[in-house]
Length: 501
Ligand code: ME8
Image (cartoon, rainbow, N blue to C red; front, top):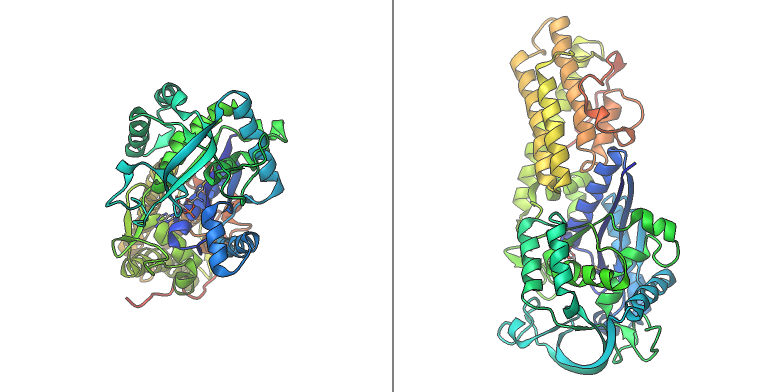
């Protein structure tokens, strides 16, 4: 059985979950669900990043201890993911003892291998990024990401000898052409490596909110070096060799473009330093913008999932972000576009198909769904759609997977309109077109279930199928002819009531 280990970044507990965080998490969730359908053994990890100066300062501003701050905000992320039907198998918090143990073990391995040495560091530091910059990185003297002043920090630190890994990283990229996707992001990462790597400071003495360095208790690890290791912690690094080697390095990290340098340069190098293989895949997406701007607390332009779910439902929410935000480029969030997508694809297409078919099955077939034709003109399209959707989920390109899936929904609606079974006399011709449409609904319920966690199951139930589309196996479940016929079809309220534009 294939194994699929998928991760989101672990989110900082200084901020409330917003639609940008949710975008990465929903994409990871949909991929996990797709791989489960394919019968893979899946492990899906998300969680929160709880150490470092940024969290400590937020805690102070809120009048909380860092641990209290972490507890409150970590719970908010957990609640947001429950609201969005996120099916993670584990939820890691970097303040957990298991994580402290793994960080110590992995960094100790890199230290023992001679890749971490003591030195002095003086640099320009952005607290919001938790990262040092060189003068050239700054824009108008400000942090290039947050556009806020950087601070001059000087400390005695341990350094990771990143510069020694340039050649090995270039080689790794050459040997693993699919390791970082999309292509443009792979080139960006290679550009950073070829542009020259400097050793980086990986510990702090100016801060105590972190994981203590095992060989020198005056230091704690720099938050990024603690955070990246979460992916190893969660599958048993340093504690359960059998489990770790089952899941590692076949991991798929999903990240936003802001943290490419950490995941595509520092992390593979650190893995090499500690004597483990770098991650198999890192997929990098762009930013979701609001009014053309990155969301931020200071700009007061953050939108949270809880603002939208009451309007669109969980499925309407998930569908929009997966279908309309291409994985890779930046995309502007628009409420109007969200309403338009919901009405077009969910209310008018899928919802309407289900409503029409169930109404006509009651009118013409006494509520009993007929079987599809083995030689239906839709059978070939269904096979093609499955192939395209599978390839698209693999890229990963959820928007293309769903776009392909909806070709089948549209074709079934068009076939109904052409045959007009609601005007025809009951008989084989009516049975044929209704059976085909029910079969399309069955297949679409399976193929769309990574996005439509609830309505896929509801469609399945209403067309009279036992169990759930989550329990079937691909590719078998996508083969034409699975709808048995002779089962009771239920007529219900609209699955996706139209929204006012
Ligand atoms: O960087 N559009 O955490 P973070 C799309 N703790 N995605 C967005 C987004 C937006 N506007 N804003 C945030 C950290 N994201 C570190 C990660 S991992 C070992 C440590 C998503 O809370 C995107 O995936 O700032 C981005 O990479 C992540 O949230 C950053 O979340």
